[in-house]
Length: 431
Image (cartoon, rainbow, N blue to C red; front, top):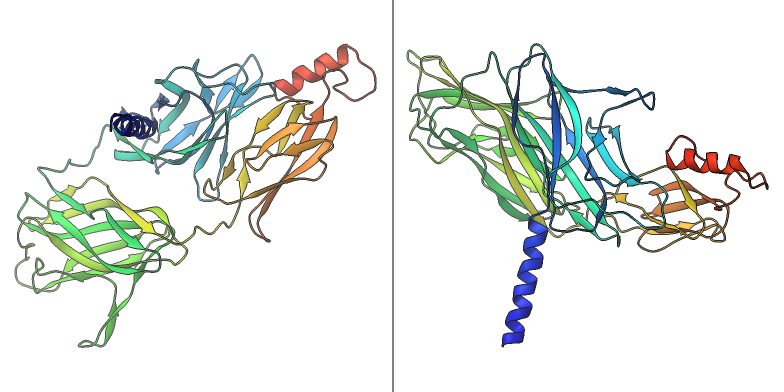
C-alpha cells in the first residue's frame, strides 16, 4: 500500500511539473505611437529544454520593430537573454496565416545545451503601437512546442496577453457583463447544440455585434426552418423580444460577425433577464479533427436603449474533440541546411508536432538519422534528410558533414579551415 501511494505521489508530481511549463508575455500598457521593450517569459519545471518553436499572432495596430546590431552589422527582430547558452540562436519567419514563427535552435556542438534557470525572460523584442491604435489589443502565443536534449517534446498551452493602448480607450465594461461560450467536448464527426451566454448587470441592452472565430476542424451547421421555409445558422432564445432578430455575415479575415438588431417599432426593446443563453447554433467537428480547438469571440460591442456602447472583453472557449486524426497537409522543420562535425549529433523538430513521420537519409555513409529525428554526422560530405508523412507529404533538407581538420574540403589543413569553422558556427556561411 505504501509503495502504491509513493508511485501515485511521483505521478502527481510529474503531472504538476508539466502543468507548470509556460511560455508567455505579461500584460502591459503602451501609448499610441510608442515603442516598448517586451519580454517573452519561460517558466519551466523541466530543466532539459534545448529548443522550442512557437507562433506569435499580433493584432492590427501593433507591429514588431527591427533593430540593428552594430557589432555584427546585421538587423534582427528577436534576441535571447542570458538564460540562453552561447551556442543557442533565435530565428523567426512569417507564416502564410500571418503568424510570426519563433525558433530556438543550436549551432554545432558535441552535446545539446540546456536553457538556464527555471523562470524569467528568455526572448526580448521591441513592439510599436500605431498612432491610431487604442483600447485593448491581444498577443497570442500558439502551437508552442519545447524539445529536451533527449528529443522528448512538450506541447505548452496557448497564452494570450492583454495590451492596453492608452489615450482614447473605449469605455471599459461595467460590472460583470460577459458574452461567452462555455468549454465543451464532442466527438470527431459529431454535431452538437451550442449556446452563446450573456451575463449582464446592465439591464437595458438592446443590440450587439460580435465576431466569432472558429479553429480549423470546426464548422457551423446550417439549419432549415420549415415554418418560414428558409435556412438559418443562429437562433435567438426566449431572452430576446419579439421584434429582435439575429443575423450573421462572414468577414474578410474568416470571422463570422453576429448582429442582434431590432425591427421597426415605436420603442426600443431590451434583452430579458440578466443571465443565460441568448443565441444558439449547431457546431460540427470534422471527421479528421482531434485534440484541442478554440472558439474566440472578439470585438464585442453592446448598445443600450439610450445608444450607450459597452465594449466587452474577448472570450475564448476550449473545444475538446475526441477521436479522429489530424490531417498533415505540410511538414516543416527548424532549418533548411544543417552543418555537423563528424561524430556529433543534432535533434531536429518537426511541425505539426503530432505528425507521425518517417525519417530517411539519402547517404547513410555521410549522415544517419534515427526514428526520433536525431541526425549524426558519419563522414565528410552532403546528404539529404527527408521527413515524410504519407506518400504526398515530405520535408527534405540538406545536411553537410565536415571533418574537424579539413573544414573547407580543399585537402589542406590550414588556418583557412579554422576561419571556415568559425564562420559556420556563427551562422555566416554554410558548406
